[in-house]
Length: 329
Image (cartoon, rainbow, N blue to C red; front, side):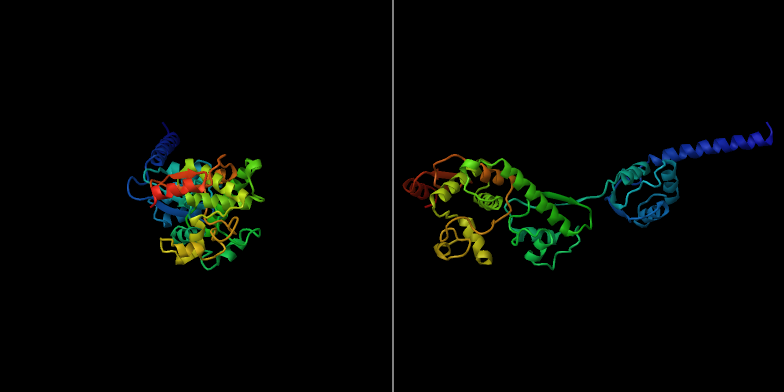
C-alpha cells in the first residue's frame, strides 16, 4: 500500500471515528440531576451567538461540539429565539430539537373563580415570573389599555390557568384573561334561554353570573340560584343578596355582615336598591355563566344556606322563614 492510500485510509478511519463519537455524544444527557437550567436565545441571533448564549447560561455542554452538531443536522438557520429551560436528561440532539421547534419554557398563573379583580391584580403583582408593566396603573388606566368598551374592570377577566414565558409582561396575562372572558360570555349568550331571561345585554348576564358565583360553590345549585334571582327580577322584587352588599362595603367588610350593613345604602346594596348592581362583583367561571344564561325552571323565590354548603329553596316567605329558623337560628 503506497503512502497516498495509507493517508486516505487513515483519514476515512478518523472520519468514521469522529462521526461515531459525535453520534454517541449527541445522545448523552447534558445533565442527569439537579434543577432545570433556564437560558435565552435573543432575537436575531446567528448560530455562533446562540451557542455562546447557551454557554454563558452555564449549560454544561461543549459549545464547539454543539455548533458542529447543529450544522451537521442542517438546522443552523432554524433555531428560534426565546426563553428555554434545560431539564435533566436532555441530550444535545434533544436540545437542538427543542430550539428548532420553539419549545419555550413556560410559567403559569392561576386566577380563581370568584376572585375579585383586586385579588387578581394582587396575584399577578406577586408573581416573580412576570415583568410588571402595569403595577403603577390604576384599574381604569389598565382597562383602557385593553378595551375602550368598559370603564370598570370587575368581572371582565376569566378565571383560568395562564401560561407565559418567563419575563413576559403582566399585560399579556390581562389581555389573555379579557379575551377568554369575552369568548366565554359570547358563547354563553348565543346558547341562552331567551324566553326566560330579563337581560338586555350580555353584560347584565355577566353581572348575574358573578352573583351566582359568589352565592354558591356547588355546581349543581347554580342554575337554581340563578332561577331564584330571575324570578325576583321578573316580579320586581329586591334581589337581597349578601355578596353584593359585601362587595359594596369594600375594605370595611371584616368577615361579618350586620343588620346595619343591609340597611346602609350603596350602589351594590340589593336590599335597598332594585334590579342588578351596576357591575359584576367577582370573576365568574364557566358554570356560573351557563347558569345565568340557562336558569332552572323553578317557582322558588328564596333560598337559605343549610350549613353544609348546600341551600334550601322555598316558594314563599312562610316556608323560607321556617327554613331560616331550622338552618340558621
